[in-house]
Amino acid sequence: MVRSLAPGLHVGALLMSALLLAAPGAARAADYAAVPGGTLASVLSTPADKGPARIAPFQLRVTPVTNAEFEAFVGAHPEWQRGRAPSAFVDGQYLHAWASAARPGPGLAPDAPVTAVSWFAAQAFCESEGGRLPTWAEWEYVAAADATHADARKLPEWRAQILSWYSQSSAGALPAVGGPANFYGVRNIHGLVWEWVDDFNALLVSADSRNQGDPDKLQFCGAGAISLQEKENYAILMRIALLSSLSATGTTDNLGFRCARSSPGESK
Image (cartoon, helix red, strand yellow):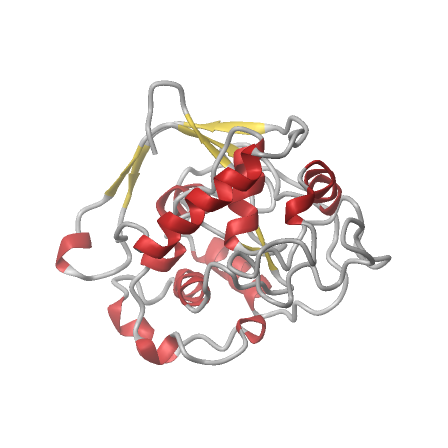
């Protein structure tokens, strides 16, 4: 399903870690849900990806990272404030709606998910609390669950519920994180914001569905669907296409993140 991160991201991540370690402070403790290991059937039809992905036990943040949490992070790590973060790690729209370099704007509720954050900044936040971004397979493994099933992807009513969110406009202020938990105790995996994953740039999508302009408009469909084994699960195609369209410095107003941790004795 995925290949390793591009060399440029490895170099950038090392530089990012150096910046993070040079600053004092850390993000406050957050709630993580324990996710047991298992397998995830691939949705892409390349020969190397036909077998199911094996998921080692890991932990996932219960909710996306909020504006208040990211505010605390940039306060402790001012090198990640808007205007101070290196241009190699963020684009010109990074935290653009914040009122100042260190404070969210008036329309950004403290308990709403933070958005307009680059992959590098999200990864730095996760490292500050001893975590990392989840892999695509880990995120999709948890996202396959509803409230009572570990894998609800075959249930028509569940698919309809997910697509009902994808069909809605993402304009306007975001609501607070929280709400019902899924089978793993994770909240807001659907229905609030799109989310970064660690290996976003390793997803394989046709160029026809990668080059559609502004990712905020979610204009991602077409030829990319040809490579999917489960074409009826259109929501997965949309997630892959969105992530595939991004660069590590990129930001959008409907893309947030949550962190993961490998379970003791397990590696990513």
